[in-house]
Image (cartoon, rainbow, N blue to C red; front, top):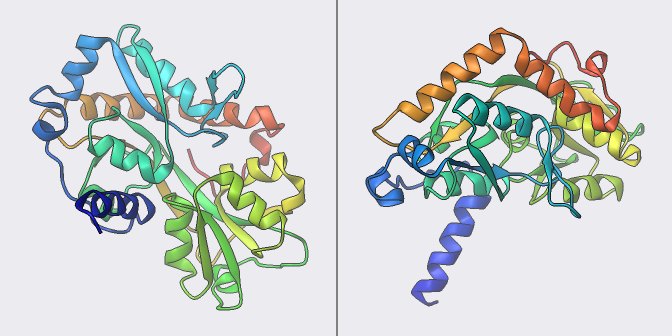
Length: 283
Protein backbone atom coordinates (compact mmCIF):
# COMPACT_ATOMS: atom_id res chain seq x y z
CA UNK A 1 0.00 0.00 0.00
CA UNK A 2 1.25 3.53 -0.79
CA UNK A 3 2.17 6.03 1.96
CA UNK A 4 -0.89 8.10 0.98
CA UNK A 5 -3.13 5.05 1.33
CA UNK A 6 -1.68 4.25 4.76
CA UNK A 7 -2.26 7.85 5.86
CA UNK A 8 -5.89 7.81 4.76
CA UNK A 9 -6.49 4.49 6.49
CA UNK A 10 -4.91 5.82 9.72
CA UNK A 11 -7.20 8.89 9.78
CA UNK A 12 -10.29 6.75 9.14
CA UNK A 13 -9.27 4.47 12.01
CA UNK A 14 -9.01 7.41 14.40
CA UNK A 15 -12.44 8.72 13.40
CA UNK A 16 -14.09 5.32 13.65
CA UNK A 17 -12.52 4.22 16.94
CA UNK A 18 -12.71 6.95 19.58
CA UNK A 19 -11.36 4.57 22.21
CA UNK A 20 -7.95 4.67 20.54
CA UNK A 21 -5.35 7.16 21.72
CA UNK A 22 -4.96 9.97 19.20
CA UNK A 23 -1.59 11.63 18.51
CA UNK A 24 -1.25 15.08 20.02
CA UNK A 25 -1.03 17.95 17.55
CA UNK A 26 0.35 21.07 19.19
CA UNK A 27 -1.08 24.56 18.84
CA UNK A 28 1.82 25.58 16.63
CA UNK A 29 1.26 22.61 14.33
CA UNK A 30 -2.48 23.18 14.02
CA UNK A 31 -2.73 26.95 13.60
CA UNK A 32 0.76 28.40 13.53
CA UNK A 33 1.44 30.46 16.66
CA UNK A 34 -2.04 32.04 16.84
CA UNK A 35 -4.29 30.88 19.66
CA UNK A 36 -7.96 30.01 19.13
CA UNK A 37 -9.05 33.00 21.20
CA UNK A 38 -6.88 35.38 19.14
CA UNK A 39 -8.06 33.87 15.84
CA UNK A 40 -11.71 34.26 16.83
CA UNK A 41 -11.19 37.88 17.80
CA UNK A 42 -9.24 38.60 14.60
CA UNK A 43 -11.71 36.98 12.21
CA UNK A 44 -14.89 37.62 14.27
CA UNK A 45 -15.90 34.06 13.32
CA UNK A 46 -16.39 30.92 15.43
CA UNK A 47 -16.18 27.63 13.55
CA UNK A 48 -18.38 24.89 15.01
CA UNK A 49 -18.90 21.20 14.25
CA UNK A 50 -22.48 20.85 13.00
CA UNK A 51 -24.12 17.43 13.24
CA UNK A 52 -26.97 17.18 10.69
CA UNK A 53 -30.05 15.34 11.95
CA UNK A 54 -28.83 15.17 15.55
CA UNK A 55 -31.86 16.61 17.32
CA UNK A 56 -32.29 17.92 19.95
CA UNK A 57 -28.75 19.30 19.58
CA UNK A 58 -28.51 20.04 15.85
CA UNK A 59 -30.70 19.98 12.79
CA UNK A 60 -29.93 21.25 9.30
CA UNK A 61 -32.67 22.18 6.85
CA UNK A 62 -31.71 20.48 3.59
CA UNK A 63 -33.36 23.17 1.46
CA UNK A 64 -32.24 26.38 3.15
CA UNK A 65 -29.11 25.04 4.84
CA UNK A 66 -30.23 26.76 8.06
CA UNK A 67 -29.17 25.21 11.36
CA UNK A 68 -31.37 24.85 14.43
CA UNK A 69 -31.40 22.95 17.72
CA UNK A 70 -30.32 23.37 21.33
CA UNK A 71 -26.60 23.65 20.57
CA UNK A 72 -27.29 26.21 17.85
CA UNK A 73 -29.12 28.35 20.41
CA UNK A 74 -26.17 27.91 22.75
CA UNK A 75 -23.75 29.01 20.04
CA UNK A 76 -25.86 32.06 19.29
CA UNK A 77 -25.50 33.04 22.94
CA UNK A 78 -21.74 32.38 22.96
CA UNK A 79 -21.34 34.57 19.88
CA UNK A 80 -23.49 37.30 21.44
CA UNK A 81 -21.48 37.16 24.68
CA UNK A 82 -18.31 37.78 22.69
CA UNK A 83 -19.71 40.92 21.11
CA UNK A 84 -21.58 39.53 18.11
CA UNK A 85 -19.35 37.00 16.36
CA UNK A 86 -20.36 35.13 13.20
CA UNK A 87 -20.97 31.40 13.67
CA UNK A 88 -19.79 29.11 10.85
CA UNK A 89 -20.98 25.48 10.91
CA UNK A 90 -18.86 22.69 9.45
CA UNK A 91 -20.73 19.44 8.68
CA UNK A 92 -19.34 16.70 10.90
CA UNK A 93 -19.98 13.59 13.00
CA UNK A 94 -19.15 12.83 16.63
CA UNK A 95 -15.94 10.99 15.72
CA UNK A 96 -14.82 13.41 13.01
CA UNK A 97 -15.40 16.45 15.20
CA UNK A 98 -12.62 15.29 17.54
CA UNK A 99 -10.20 15.13 14.61
CA UNK A 100 -11.35 18.53 13.32
CA UNK A 101 -10.81 20.16 16.71
CA UNK A 102 -7.42 18.52 17.04
CA UNK A 103 -6.31 19.74 13.62
CA UNK A 104 -7.53 23.30 14.25
CA UNK A 105 -10.19 23.10 11.52
CA UNK A 106 -12.94 24.08 13.97
CA UNK A 107 -12.94 26.03 17.23
CA UNK A 108 -15.26 23.82 19.26
CA UNK A 109 -17.44 20.72 19.15
CA UNK A 110 -20.58 20.28 21.24
CA UNK A 111 -22.11 17.12 22.74
CA UNK A 112 -18.88 15.19 23.20
CA UNK A 113 -18.24 12.58 25.85
CA UNK A 114 -14.91 13.46 27.49
CA UNK A 115 -13.12 10.11 27.51
CA UNK A 116 -9.53 9.73 28.74
CA UNK A 117 -8.48 8.65 25.24
CA UNK A 118 -9.96 11.78 23.65
CA UNK A 119 -8.30 13.90 26.31
CA UNK A 120 -4.95 12.86 24.83
CA UNK A 121 -5.94 14.65 21.64
CA UNK A 122 -8.10 17.62 22.67
CA UNK A 123 -9.19 19.56 25.76
CA UNK A 124 -12.66 19.66 27.26
CA UNK A 125 -14.72 22.22 29.09
CA UNK A 126 -16.73 21.49 32.18
CA UNK A 127 -19.89 19.44 31.66
CA UNK A 128 -22.67 21.28 29.83
CA UNK A 129 -25.18 18.75 31.24
CA UNK A 130 -25.36 15.12 32.35
CA UNK A 131 -27.07 12.54 30.20
CA UNK A 132 -28.71 9.30 31.30
CA UNK A 133 -28.90 6.31 28.95
CA UNK A 134 -31.48 3.79 27.84
CA UNK A 135 -32.68 1.93 24.77
CA UNK A 136 -35.20 2.24 21.97
CA UNK A 137 -36.79 -1.11 21.21
CA UNK A 138 -40.00 -2.63 19.91
CA UNK A 139 -42.52 -4.07 22.41
CA UNK A 140 -41.39 -7.66 21.83
CA UNK A 141 -37.95 -6.89 23.28
CA UNK A 142 -38.31 -6.29 27.00
CA UNK A 143 -35.30 -4.87 28.85
CA UNK A 144 -35.11 -2.74 31.96
CA UNK A 145 -31.49 -3.21 33.13
CA UNK A 146 -28.07 -3.28 31.51
CA UNK A 147 -27.89 -6.98 32.39
CA UNK A 148 -30.90 -7.58 30.15
CA UNK A 149 -28.98 -6.31 27.09
CA UNK A 150 -25.52 -7.51 28.10
CA UNK A 151 -25.89 -10.88 26.39
CA UNK A 152 -24.23 -12.43 23.30
CA UNK A 153 -27.66 -13.01 21.78
CA UNK A 154 -28.58 -9.30 21.88
CA UNK A 155 -27.78 -7.12 18.86
CA UNK A 156 -27.34 -3.43 19.68
CA UNK A 157 -26.99 -0.44 17.35
CA UNK A 158 -25.12 2.75 18.31
CA UNK A 159 -23.89 5.80 16.42
CA UNK A 160 -20.15 5.81 15.86
CA UNK A 161 -18.02 7.93 18.18
CA UNK A 162 -20.92 8.99 20.39
CA UNK A 163 -21.50 8.76 24.14
CA UNK A 164 -24.06 6.08 23.25
CA UNK A 165 -21.26 3.90 21.91
CA UNK A 166 -19.15 4.57 25.00
CA UNK A 167 -21.98 3.54 27.33
CA UNK A 168 -22.91 0.44 25.34
CA UNK A 169 -19.36 -0.89 25.13
CA UNK A 170 -18.79 -0.24 28.83
CA UNK A 171 -22.00 -1.70 30.24
CA UNK A 172 -22.99 -4.26 27.58
CA UNK A 173 -19.65 -5.66 26.39
CA UNK A 174 -21.04 -9.15 25.85
CA UNK A 175 -23.66 -7.97 23.34
CA UNK A 176 -23.13 -7.81 19.59
CA UNK A 177 -22.66 -4.06 19.10
CA UNK A 178 -22.68 -2.45 15.66
CA UNK A 179 -21.61 1.19 15.33
CA UNK A 180 -23.21 3.08 12.45
CA UNK A 181 -21.91 6.33 11.01
CA UNK A 182 -25.15 8.30 11.38
CA UNK A 183 -28.26 8.37 13.55
CA UNK A 184 -30.41 7.65 10.49
CA UNK A 185 -28.52 4.38 9.92
CA UNK A 186 -29.09 3.40 13.57
CA UNK A 187 -32.82 4.08 13.24
CA UNK A 188 -33.01 2.13 9.96
CA UNK A 189 -31.24 -0.87 11.50
CA UNK A 190 -33.70 -0.83 14.39
CA UNK A 191 -36.81 -0.30 12.26
CA UNK A 192 -35.81 -3.09 9.86
CA UNK A 193 -35.14 -5.60 12.63
CA UNK A 194 -31.39 -5.95 11.99
CA UNK A 195 -30.86 -5.20 15.68
CA UNK A 196 -33.10 -5.70 18.71
CA UNK A 197 -32.40 -2.36 20.33
CA UNK A 198 -30.39 0.84 20.06
CA UNK A 199 -28.65 2.50 22.99
CA UNK A 200 -29.44 6.20 23.17
CA UNK A 201 -28.82 9.04 25.54
CA UNK A 202 -32.23 9.98 26.93
CA UNK A 203 -32.89 13.20 25.00
CA UNK A 204 -31.61 11.63 21.78
CA UNK A 205 -33.64 8.46 22.27
CA UNK A 206 -36.84 10.34 23.05
CA UNK A 207 -36.38 12.46 19.92
CA UNK A 208 -35.63 9.44 17.70
CA UNK A 209 -38.71 7.62 19.03
CA UNK A 210 -40.97 10.60 18.45
CA UNK A 211 -39.71 11.11 14.89
CA UNK A 212 -39.81 7.39 14.03
CA UNK A 213 -42.60 5.56 15.92
CA UNK A 214 -41.72 2.35 14.04
CA UNK A 215 -38.62 1.87 16.20
CA UNK A 216 -40.70 1.34 19.34
CA UNK A 217 -40.44 3.07 22.70
CA UNK A 218 -37.63 4.52 24.80
CA UNK A 219 -36.81 2.97 28.19
CA UNK A 220 -34.22 4.14 30.70
CA UNK A 221 -31.87 1.33 31.73
CA UNK A 222 -31.11 0.84 35.42
CA UNK A 223 -28.83 -1.23 37.66
CA UNK A 224 -26.87 0.90 37.30
CA UNK A 225 -28.39 4.17 36.13
CA UNK A 226 -25.66 5.39 33.78
CA UNK A 227 -25.11 9.11 33.41
CA UNK A 228 -22.17 10.62 31.51
CA UNK A 229 -21.27 14.29 31.12
CA UNK A 230 -21.71 16.03 27.80
CA UNK A 231 -18.86 18.46 27.19
CA UNK A 232 -17.52 20.92 24.64
CA UNK A 233 -14.30 19.88 22.95
CA UNK A 234 -11.62 22.50 22.24
CA UNK A 235 -8.06 22.45 20.93
CA UNK A 236 -5.11 21.75 23.21
CA UNK A 237 -3.06 24.92 23.50
CA UNK A 238 -1.04 26.91 26.01
CA UNK A 239 -3.41 29.89 25.84
CA UNK A 240 -6.38 28.84 27.99
CA UNK A 241 -8.55 31.93 27.43
CA UNK A 242 -10.97 30.20 25.03
CA UNK A 243 -11.55 27.21 27.29
CA UNK A 244 -11.72 29.39 30.41
CA UNK A 245 -14.34 31.63 28.79
CA UNK A 246 -16.46 28.64 27.82
CA UNK A 247 -16.21 27.21 31.36
CA UNK A 248 -17.52 30.46 32.82
CA UNK A 249 -20.25 30.59 30.17
CA UNK A 250 -21.32 27.03 31.07
CA UNK A 251 -21.32 27.66 34.83
CA UNK A 252 -23.40 30.82 34.42
CA UNK A 253 -25.99 29.28 32.11
CA UNK A 254 -26.31 26.04 34.10
CA UNK A 255 -26.71 28.08 37.27
CA UNK A 256 -29.49 30.21 35.82
CA UNK A 257 -31.30 27.20 34.30
CA UNK A 258 -30.75 28.45 30.76
CA UNK A 259 -29.03 25.25 29.60
CA UNK A 260 -32.13 23.31 30.60
CA UNK A 261 -34.36 25.71 28.67
CA UNK A 262 -32.27 25.38 25.52
CA UNK A 263 -32.30 21.58 25.72
CA UNK A 264 -36.06 21.39 26.35
CA UNK A 265 -36.53 23.84 23.46
CA UNK A 266 -34.57 21.48 21.22
CA UNK A 267 -37.16 18.78 21.92
CA UNK A 268 -40.15 20.91 20.92
CA UNK A 269 -39.89 20.43 17.10
CA UNK A 270 -40.86 16.77 17.56
CA UNK A 271 -43.60 17.48 20.09
CA UNK A 272 -41.78 16.66 23.34
CA UNK A 273 -42.08 18.75 26.51
CA UNK A 274 -40.25 18.92 29.84
CA UNK A 275 -42.58 16.35 31.42
CA UNK A 276 -41.42 13.75 28.85
CA UNK A 277 -37.82 13.88 30.13
CA UNK A 278 -36.99 11.10 32.63
CA UNK A 279 -36.12 12.18 36.16
CA UNK A 280 -32.68 10.55 35.80
CA UNK A 281 -31.65 13.24 33.29
CA UNK A 282 -30.08 16.19 35.10
CA UNK A 283 -29.22 19.55 33.56
